Image: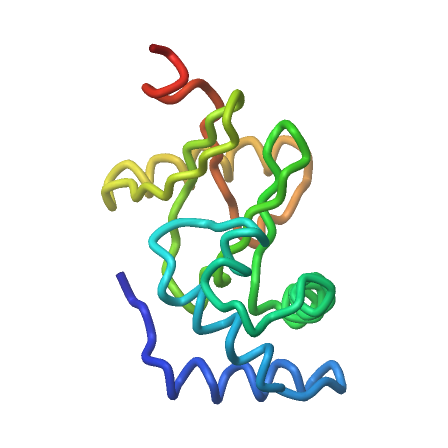
Length: 149
């Protein structure tokens, strides 16, 4: 993992928010901190549970701004239930396993060899369509062990 430290995240957040004419407010700093501590993508309710000082409407608004600034990524499950995590350039490149029935999302990493093979395969597909790849993301959809039982 190439996770960066809090001071570097704060500097990056300030810069990226300034680029869209926004400030790195106290509430945005709190949300970034909560997402940095999370071990997987989390919901707005989980963000609110992590800090009772945050108002729900404020979290919605601030997540939208943080997403626009490229600091936060929103992941939608089948039931349109959003989960949030810090962007890959802050954490690291990874993929997701998403349980369709319960909406649980877990991160996973591929070995360098498999990641390279995946990128080569995706590039071949993109070339067939005259498409230029900026990045890729892989989500595995299915049913977790808890929902199978």
